[in-house]
Length: 164
Image 1 (cartoon, rainbow, N blue to C red):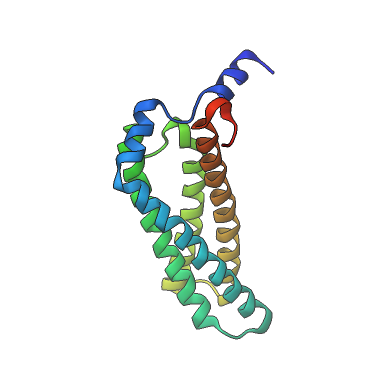
Image 2: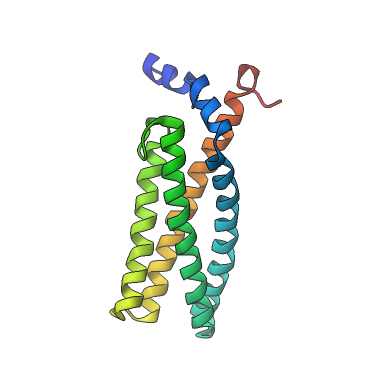
């Protein structure tokens, strides 16, 4: 491993002042509530989408669930940008969360494409569900990125980087 790679890996996710801002802001709590709520809606919605694809039934329920998931996504993105501004001093693409933000924009683009197709009726229900599955796969990757960052932050806060 190169010295630069070792230094990057050893560098904590937050400086002491960033950690203090993170712990002091209400936006950390907001993210902590919205993230599991969005994941729960995602799981239910995925089930409804798969049910529709398997049986042809429940299109309205699947659509409502996708719209709710999309609304939560937009909300968590806006509140997450505010959180990032408070903690890191910039709304998006702070070095510590750069790749999570990049993937988040892909997730948003896919959800927005779904909304466009639904509202303009330019896509069939099957095409809409295909876009939804792609959006949900990207969301799952993004959620995994954030869980890994949460784990890293917890490891950074313990002596010698080992869980307490």
